[in-house]
Amino acid sequence: MSQFDFKKRSLLSGPHLLGSLMILAGVFALISPMLMESGSSLEKTLLVGDGAVVIGLAIVSSYEGTLIYFSENKMKDYTSVFGYKFGEWVELPSIATVTVTSTNYRSTNTSNGISPTLSGEVTDYRVLLYDNSSKPAFSFAYPKKLIAMDAAKRLADNLHAELVVRLPEK
Image 1 (spheres, rainbow, N blue to C red):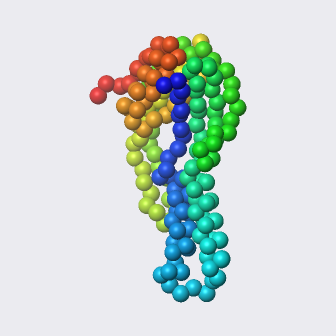
Image 2: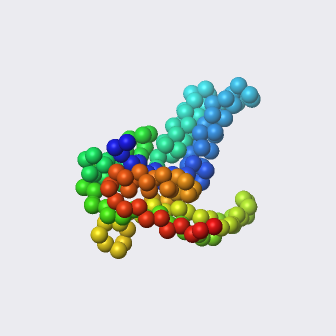
C-alpha cells in the first residue's frame, strides 16, 4: 500500500457522540407524526428532522488525521468532513527511526451530576517517527498494541527506517 492514513476519531465520545444523538433525534422527529398527533405542520417536522440528521451526519463524519503518501514522499495533516480531506501537502521529512512505546495514565471525567463519573487506568500505544533530531516528528496514538505494531511495521518498511520497540515485558 502506497499510503498511510491515521485518523484521530472516537465515535463513542465527544462531538461524535453528540452527532449520533442528533441523528437519533432527527429520525425520531421524522417518525413521530406517525406515532402521535402533532400540532406542527408536516413541512416543519420534515425541516427539523432532516436538519438534525444532516447536522448529525456532518458531525459524525468529521475528524482529523494525517495522510502520508510514501511514493511521492509527501504528507498532510487534514480535517475530513463528509470524506473530503482539507489540508496542505508538505514534503515528508526523512524518517530515520520508528519507535513503539506505551503510556499509562489515569483517565477521569468531570462529574456533572447526571452521568456517572468514570475513572480508570488507560494504556495508549504510541508510534513515534523520528528524523535526525531527538524529538519525534510525528506521533500516532492507538488503543491496542497489535494495531500500533502493525502501523509501526508498515511505516518502518515503507519509510526504510529502523523499527525500535520499547514496550514493557508482562
